[in-house]
Length: 415
Image (tube, rainbow, N blue to C red):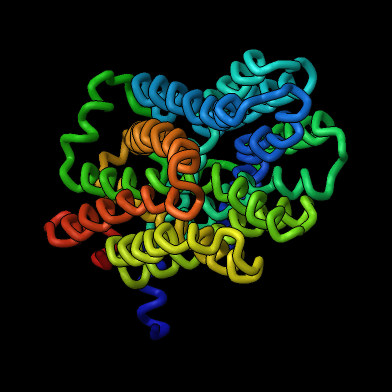
């Protein structure tokens, strides 16, 4: 890129380049810390199964309850336009602190399945005020480079979701202390946003409450197709994040590896998504979002088909393919959100992003429940194949979007 082209590409950004990257770094740190709450209970399932005599189905509900809580929270938030009529920064901070309180209550007061599931639901409910508002705040800082910025943000979020496995591997043998530590991280994340992050120069005035805005999101053809691509991606993503650590534990146990190796491996496999998100952001901005999402879903879909046949195989081979899956399965996530910010009504971007995540996470509750049923029926060898249908349908939606005039508005014409 020539110097003249670089200067013209930055002409829309009337602020020092360092300011927006500084804001992105702080916001990414806050997302990492806040979203560490998500899998905090999933990472300690083996201990809870032993201590609470949990069945596989009950253990699965500890993760599913977070998904359902998040769906309920995002639905309420989208219906009430909360990210658009309230300060997104204050919503983020309050939600992170309340989510941390719910997680800490699990550590301090949960001694059986029902209370644990209820508190995990509340954790997910409050996290609805962390993820979508964080994306909206980021969008106020970036027009050009938005795909990369969102990629960095979602990459940080991915590391946050992987972090409980690392805390579990390196931390205390007392799982309650580990959960309290993770709660403290989430509080710190909320305070970072409140004290050190401000809205960027592209922030719009606070919108008026409009109950019809949630329905209008799907009246926009470009946003609708971007959402359909996102739904295909989500069908695969959380089932992979939930059950691949379980499969890795079982596979490594079969070949005699120590449990701590499986925990560290699970962190690395999920955490590889952070690199995938950054790479997806770079390619999305430079080569086009519809192309990037299609390639990412093609690679992750192929991993769905292959990974089960490596169950019980040499650990290095299993973990290599699992890491590729972990990187590709979330590499496209930020690009669907970037499409919504570019194709939707700027004043109600928060509502559109929140509704997108609400419906996507609702879909994950089905695929998360499906995998253990298939494991019992056909084993790990074939269970993950069922997830490949999501990437396939997602690719079709994004290629359709690529063929439409609306695609010219994506990534400044790099559709």
